[in-house]
Image 1 (cartoon, rainbow, N blue to C red):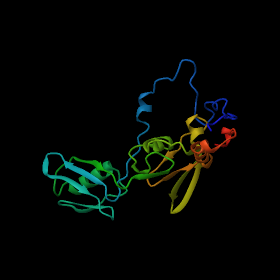
Image 2: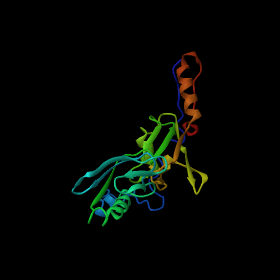
Image 3: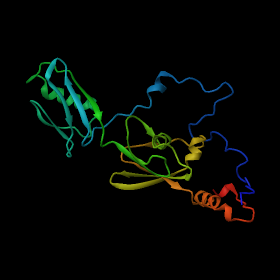
Length: 231
């Protein structure tokens, strides 16, 4: 027997927009255009880590062009200067380090560039009720909403007010609980996500139960009444 009745209590309207710290709601004129500073404010310095792949170039010296991979200890081997500690530096800092080691003794005024070609170390884990759980690289600034979207978005069983983020800080494992639906509505700020964070989107057991009941509704002979508030 088909579903006869849904009681939509708690779903008469969406939560109000805004209310979170530093979150402003646009007026009737719509959202203003971002400034030039806004367009680049999402940048975050990338820190090189073990097993990352880099392309190193010294301008005008073809023999010093190299595609290298950082080893497990965070080091690389480079012609003339030997082993260099790379992990924990930005590509720009590593370029300056290599230039300093080359300068004078090997090259008069080396112009060194370091470009990241593949990242292995700077990744996040997104798991739980998302469409594409897995490991995703972090390049630039990442937030919780962007991280979940990168994993294909929350699926139909997601419990958006129960999103957990695990993070290690100074060797201490820490955990935070976030309401993704509230963040989407601007009720809370969208928190930053960092490399090695683990994000778990929890399961709504009520939604799973609801679908199971619908699939077996042909066996039901009485009306089904649910309060969507509990889902």
